[in-house]
Image (tube, rainbow, N blue to C red; front, top):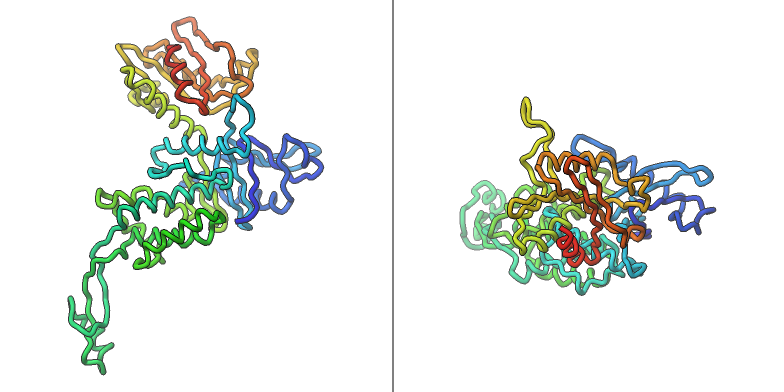
Length: 431
């Protein structure tokens, strides 16, 4: 892997060296800037795939020239020449800066693991050197921990169809091949037989992934772990036809140890991502929409805090529609619905940085408030909360609430993802 540049979401990248010392920009060399621009054009929208312009914006600023700015996607982009951009979330730490972004990475990984479709079970970051690893290396380490768990439980074997020219008779004689191979070797038998063997599709894919990661990793810890793990797959052939082997994988209770590994193998072997981008195989985009990550994490943590107190907590609640005639149209799906003793509270998460300016409604979107009002009326509850991530500007801000005059009250709560359990207990006391 090549040079790594680390930025945060909503940061701006330029190639004008006159502004290389300006803290408002990240300056990279012209060639890397041009490659990054080409990458954006390469990842074009199709019917199945998203557009790179959904997470990066190309613009122009007077005196500066072309600029690239990131939206609310976080992850790693690797360009064909090996140049990498690592995009981290903007997380506010009340006690100051996060040196080396160590805590940012740990919190982000914790948030990722709350997502239902994020393949991670055995991952433990307690011993992970996050300050020495970029996100791609961390994801490699996640994969290796899952493989270690598999090896610990024992890799699965099954009866595999084999063909061989043996000195003894076994299984079924393949007459045509026998005649062709043994015209002058009367003592041999060309036979087909079944053998209990670990050379099955799941193991072939895992071995192929390990061999590919062995070439990609620049982490000494990961490289050492890969060498050790490969010894457990000595009797397995690395997959040569990924699509064919993926199509043969059947996940059930007998192959539960592969449940997390197969999605990761698909990501590493086929340059897939958790977002639906397609491009040539020399560029990679492993990206996550922070709006979804934040929503999933807050919903998970609210369940932990509120359920023990008797609250029924549901996420992405369905069943209400904005219009019901001539038939149900425009489904309403609030992020979180809390119910207890006939009381209903609606909560919606928004990964957006508010501003300390009451005249500008603190930066709250008018469309979002229309949405909250609709929730209130359709769920027949006055209690609406919007949960924004806290930032340095809004930390410790006085209570913000809006009353409609006809029964709806929308309150704002700032979630501190660095101390989320205490923060949500504070929210529980408020309601």
